[in-house]
Length: 211
Image 1 (cartoon, helix red, strand yellow):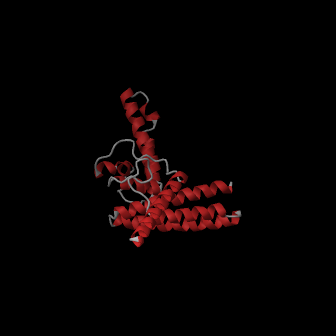
Image 2: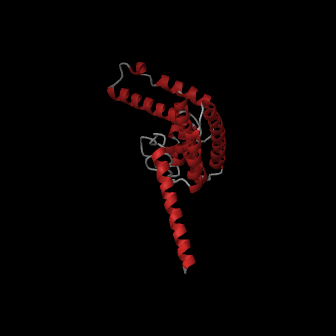
Image 3: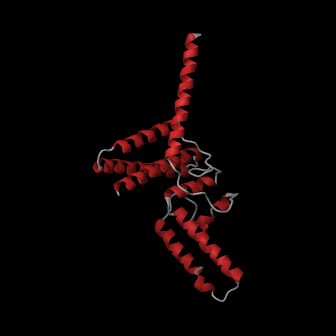
C-alpha cells in the first residue's frame, strides 16, 4: 500500500515537473509569426495554390532558384504599370494576385514555413497560434538543456561553437523532414518541424547576442 502511494506521488511529481517545463519553454519560445495562408484552405488542391502560383509541384524539396525566377516573372506580369487604363476591378485583382505571389514566395523559399504550409494539407498546425502539435517531453528537455548552454556561454567563442552545432542540427532536422514528407509520415514530419522552429529561435537569439 505504501509502495503504491509512493509510486503515485512520484508520477504526480513527474507530471508536475513536465508541465512546469512545458510552460517555461512556452514562455521563452515565440513561434515564427506565420499564421498560415490568409484564405481558409479545404483541400489538397487548394493547398497547392502557393506552389501552382510559382509553377512548382508540391514538395518539401524545391528548387529555390526556380522559385525566385518564377516569382520575378509573375511579379512583372502583375506590375501596376501593366494595368494603367484598366478598370478598378482589374487593378484590384492584379494587386491581390501580386500579394498572393509575394506570400507564396515568402512561404516557399523558407524551409520552416514551407514545412508548416505542407502540414496544413493534413490539418496540422505547427508553429502558429492554433498549434495542434505539442512538443514531446524529450524535445522539451533537449531544448531547455540547449538554452542553458547558451545562457551559460562565457565568451563569443563559446557562442560561435554552439551556433555551429545548431546549424548542423538544423540541417539534420531538415533532412528528416524531407524523408518524413516523402513517406507521408505526417506526425514525424510535424515533430521535426516543431523542433526546427525551436532550433531556429535559439539561433536567432545567439545572433542577437553577437551584435
